[in-house]
Amino acid sequence: MRYCLKHIILICFVLSILQNAYAQYPYMYSTYPFIRYEENQLIFPGDSSRMLTFFQKLDDLIFNGKGHIQILHIGGSHVQADIFTGRTRERFSTFFPGNKGSRGLVFPYRIANTNNPYNYVASYTGKWESCKNTQQNLSCELGITGISATTKDTSSTISLSLSTDYYQSYDFNTIRVFHKIDSNQFAIIPIGKDSNSYKTICYPTLGYTDIFLSEYCQSIVLGLKKTDSLQWGYTLYGLQLENNDPGITYHAAGVNGAGTYSFLRCALFTPQLRILKPDLVIFGLGINDAASKDFNAASFEYNYKKLIDSVLAANPDAAILLLTNNDSFRKYKRKFYVNKNGETVEQSMIRVAKERNLGVWDFFSIMGGLGSMETWMKNGLGKTDRVHFTTSGYKLMGDLLFEAIIKTYEQYLIRTYTTDNSY
Image (cartoon, rainbow, N blue to C red; front, side, top):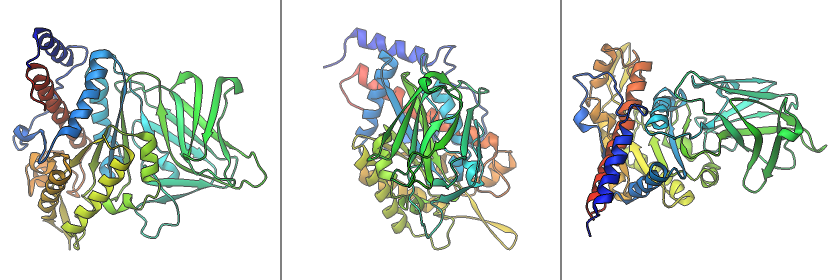
């Protein structure tokens, strides 16, 4: 049965909302002749029904102002810096009116002597020891963020302050703290707040504590409290900054140097995914896998399938999107050589997506294919290591990823509300 006229009017109305002056969509960005813009779309080598479920939730949010969509983007250094993912988050936060959302997952990376995202300031006091999923012989448990920090000093603190220089402030009134919970662990509390202005609830079997604040804020200082004589330390896995407003939360979990094998080392990955329950998981892992001379496509695909199984075990309805590697180079004796594994990763991801009914954003092809990183570098978009991107390059990546997702969503809207054919 074809939809009646009111549905057609409705879809036209929504598309106009997505493109009105307030929302600024479609966004303007710099164009370059070497980028294959015509290929900037999501592809589905198999069935696309998982993405359909995600788009239906997006419908409810846009049409009815209801719901809170969780997107989780996992990767290595491209994600830890949060320039690429930060841009995509900014685009999602402003492409339709009334979208509040929240900042989502954060980690005080400075505590582990590594770079922190630009859009929030993290500081700490006390002595902490860190652990990352890039370490081969782990002596620690890790979760979604792939990193942890441990202290034995109750005077240690963590301070977080969200930047207000971007599209929205991402204020929050709930802090979900993922941490180790046993009889040896300190409790975590806000510092400098009256005891009547917050409430904490610990969930020992789930591995997190919720801190509910009586008012919205953009910064917080967290401290530790010894509540039992047996307690000797505290291990932090990550924090989730949330609010009660409907919208889209775009989480980013990245560790410099991480590959597929890195997140498979995280024993708490699936349990914490069950708590986060993402509606869409974006995997941007592969650039570090492919950097190895011993790269093996079969092992790479096996690792990805195990990660996918972890996601589906946490949320069977989750949509999953694989991002192919950017083109990259290897350096040998002061000379750079194109890394042909980029093509292998591209084909591996397409095979996995076909088998598991996932989506693919083929950035390798969009950016120009084999050897194209040289051109990106010469145009100020790629760094001289020919692996990473400049700030301009990462922001362009964020624009392109967002556009590819929304273009696919627009196609879904038109097909859903004008014919009886599903996307």
